[in-house]
Image 1 (cartoon, one colour):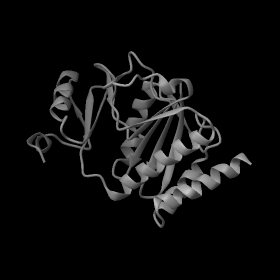
Image 2 (cartoon, rainbow, N blue to C red; image 1 turned 30 degrees about the vertical axis):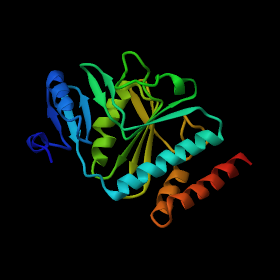
Image 3 (cartoon, rainbow, N blue to C red; image 1 turned 135 degrees about the vertical axis):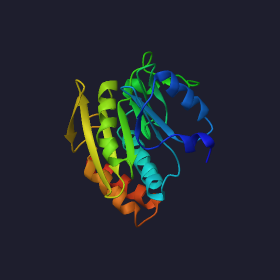
Length: 216
């Protein structure tokens, strides 16, 4: 653990100027943590990440990408990528997707995705083990203001997905994706439950059968 990590509180929001936040994040480039900035407060989430968190992270990415491929929907998934409105907001969601015509909107070689130049992702997903209440609260408000179209929180402990459609800086619970029509949260939750007892390749085979049934 670095000296900087021991000096800064993690997994909580602390009042910080944007300039201080930028300096802290720059100093953490060699660390594998995530950082957020919202309404004058910053939050750091540092390793370690649990086995269950990492497993659900992989299952969700596979499921979304497989569904999009089978439906012929262009999709570009991003893993723990920084999205920034300079001086205002910053976030590093576990997973983000640009869909359809937006799938090619971010050129290769881009570093931080600057939202004053590029659109916000269509879908953002947070995998929540210890951060569930924050993901459902403050981060949801952050993503509402950023203009994300849809936001999912994966509750690792209970193998559940709390999904929201976002519009007009507000959100409402949904049971089926609106940006990926036909993708039900219940199917994804069952995949998460199955991943506790079988390999991810077996879960993938099961997901393939479920998605293909819906096409028949």
